[in-house]
Length: 125
Image (cartoon, rainbow, N blue to C red; front, side):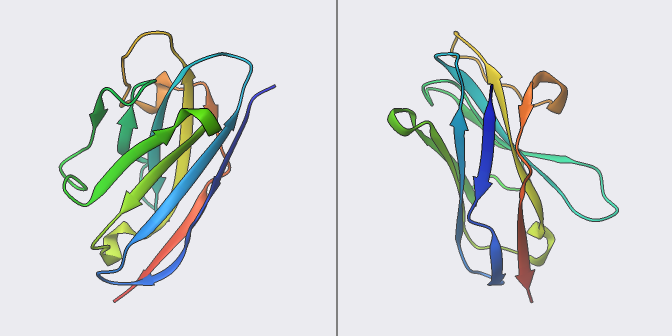
């Protein structure tokens, strides 16, 4: 059984920073991870991805330079550091996991097999 649990969301002000965590309990030895977000009335949006050993990471232009994805494989935890938050960053953030033995990352939601329930981020202006 696979469990994906996000945490770290909350209410912050414009310009603040926040670090989200994703803890994964899985039977497979390695996995790629992606972060996605969805605001009310909007489509789900890709935020960041990392390969199994964080050798490769990828960000869309909307968050590049403000977000950093990292991972602690010893503790099966992946982080999303978000800096200089803007009101448009407010959304529910989801962690997605894909069993993966190569150092590849994925940016499409359909490429991931397991999802958490999400953690809410509010950004006040």
